[in-house]
Length: 129
Image (cartoon, helix red, strand yellow):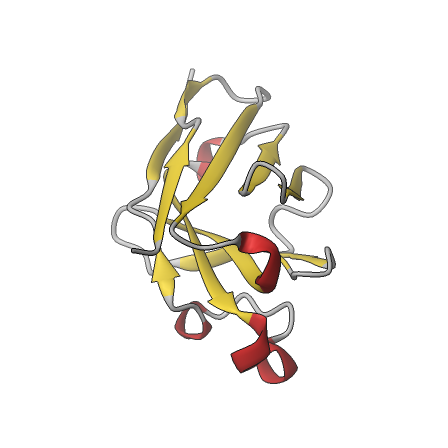
C-alpha cells in the first residue's frame, strides 16, 4: 500500500526555521516526482516546491530563497527545509507524488495539484510570535 507520511511541523516564531520530512512506504521514491503543497484556512491548496526523480527542483515565487527541497533516496524520504518563516507561511503542509514514467514528460517540475496522485495527510506549520 502506497503511503506518504509527513512530519516536522510545529509552532515557530517569525524568522525561524523548520524542516519537514515526507517518508514513503510501500513504494520506492526513486522513480517519483515529489511535491510539497500547503493549504491555509479559507484558501485553496497551493504548490510550494517539487523535486523530480533526477533531483531537479522548482519553487513557488513566494518561497524562493527561503525554502529548500531535497531527497534522500536511501531513506526513501524527501525534505523541505524552511528558513526565514513568515506568518503567511502558516498552513497545513502536505507532500504528494506521481510516477515520472507515467507523467514526467507533461508534468515535469509542475506545482499543479491535479498532477499528483498520492497524498499524505499533512502536518501543521504555524508561524506566530
